[in-house]
Image 1 (tube, helix red, strand yellow):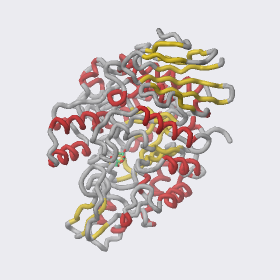
Image 2: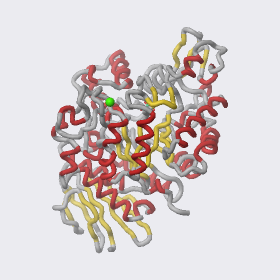
Image 3: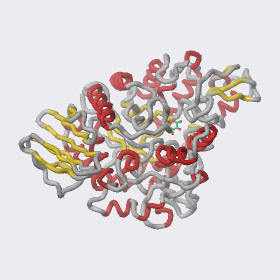
Image 4: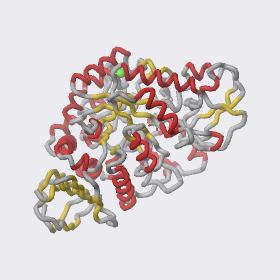
Length: 532
Ligand code: GLC
Ligand code: CA
């Protein structure tokens, strides 16, 4: 069977609010995105994943949809959306949209109807109870909120303005499939499915992720919408095991999955994302190794470290002192593996996290909620802010840094969230022109991935498993044999490379000569071809 196109593709995530404003209202929009497509083309991107642009009250920045078939006016019009699809396609770029169907906004007409009375015909589109059960919401606080009008509690795994849909209702499912097919018929190339591991839940039995109905509903969605279309689908599945992720992609219900086994490794186990601990690289390597082995010739991986929910990876796992080196190193070890690469806007120029001095500057609902919750629990301001600096989702949501002009070229007006003051130094214009910039490195790395099949098809063998600072692995495919090296150390290291015939394919420091016994500088990374 021919290789699926999405196995060789590079996906770039756009967070529309923060990418490019075109009309000076301080909010990124569709016209802004269209004006930047050449930039993405230049990077070597194949697919754009657009975070939600549907009509929304923006309680959770668009992940709370009030109408699936309209574009929110802050982003533009339906014509702008059609334009974006058209222009992207003309440039050879595909476009996938975010599909948020675990919940809607409380302003969706279904919910407005449903909450109007217990016998409303949309009542059963949502999940109701007379008494709440002990389930917490992902953003903190209870997952049940009392509705005064209809005198019952409704269920919401995220904010109380994001009521969960009841997928057990057949009519609701048909409605959703119609929406999905409408968008696909409009010519988009697939979907990223938001927290799709939750749709099969059984609230009564406390089974949320990977619930008893997950497979049947995914199968039905596939049969009704995805089958027979040349699209790509990626399911966000935070609660799913790696084995399940493999099974779902192997069956082809979804083409790939975002799983999160590698994501929480800088958190105290079982204490949630705000309780910090340093990254254990040995653990990190172990998780990726398991993934690479499990998926090999079976399922398919998505390769990501960053997105709009995760802090900027340079600040998280790299080094601000060695910013460019560590940004390139992280890309090398990540994209050297098997799977489809995902880049989150700004990652390709090494954008960093943010430390706002006042809580008023934060915009993210999760950050605001957790601040209050931790405050009420009696934590000190200092420790709360340490967690927020490390983990707030606003770290990755500050405006894209295009150039040195006011507000980093993002907007002529007042940005909806403050620009990171380091934009004078870190910006695309500067980085793209720099032959040692992060952008050029990403570009070279993606070109290399496309040239050698070993990156898409090869097996994976971890080396120096117990080394706390080095991430090193080999990959083989037919006559292609490569070695990927990344150092997480902020000091010089010695390494031994017991190979004949080594040739350098890419490196983040060309002053370093490749030889059997070598000293490597902090955050060094390279890929070597072995045996010619
Ligand atoms: C996903 C999204 C996140 C959102 C949540 C609820 O995790 O990526 O941004 O808050 O789902 O829709
Ligand atoms: Ca705008």
